[in-house]
Amino acid sequence: MGDVRLRDGVEFDLASGETVVCDARRPDGDVAILSHAHGDHLGATGGVVASELTASVAAARRGGDPPTLVEHPAIDLHNAGHVPGSRAALVDDGERRVLYTGDVSTRDRAYLSGFEPVSADVLIVESTYGRPEYVFPDQASIEAAVVDFLEDTADRPAIVFGYAFGRAQTAQLLVGRADRAGRIYASESVMAVNAAVEAHLEVEFPVEPWTEDATLESGDVLVRPGSPRTDAVSRLVEDTGAVTVGLSGWAIDDGYRYARGVDAAFPLSDHCDYQELLDLVDAVEPEVVYTHHGFAESLASTLTARGFESYALRPNQATLAEF
Image (cartoon, rainbow, N blue to C red; front, side, top):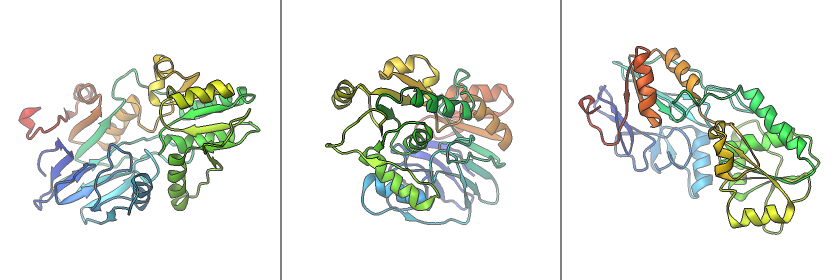
């Protein structure tokens, strides 16, 4: 197995001589892996190793036909726990087992099950929250806090912000738990993802599509992506008195609420926090760890201090000598 490289996606070589490319915008290799259908991973339009749900969401998000799904005898896919359909890839070429997580979460939340680590010789793991200050409360407490806030403000409309794919689906289910008499709306982009997820999983999102002529009244909730600071949102808040809610792991920092300009913020994340990343590495027991995305240098340093051979991937780096 050759060195791991970060170019257009994460690359590594198999004993067969084939090059595996993970989450590249324009994969240039023999095998392409697509871990999930978020925009920063979604690029490949040809044959990819991915889940059926990822292919469906990809089509829903960018239009056109879904990518063609292929299989490879060296690759097994495992639920990554990040968003619906997300997969980690265990690649075994007979000489080494490489585990590429993509974005990953080991915690169960709402309707999603967390990633269950598997053993591997080489681990390639994201490090979005790879610093000690990013440790989240337990999931049940976070979800309860969101529901409590929505119930406490049930006499006003609410606008809940979250990524159209992933966070928004969890948000809709949490809104549904809250004791509010109003309707639940979702934006067009969220509705498109809802349809793809509902077609593959046993889950329903009891929401109505938000249209230009829709009204937002007391008790109603609109779930949408984007910024709370847009003119359209500002006008809606001014006209209706709606409270605004941000959902993000970055909300563990008190400054997030002020930076985003929302009335309340909760650290609801689709990623592992710092401690969960450490626990994941311990469970995999790899000989070598490569970190990428987010606080890659910080996490690699921590893992080195904990006894692992660890490297932070840098773009266009070719050999271990360049670490």
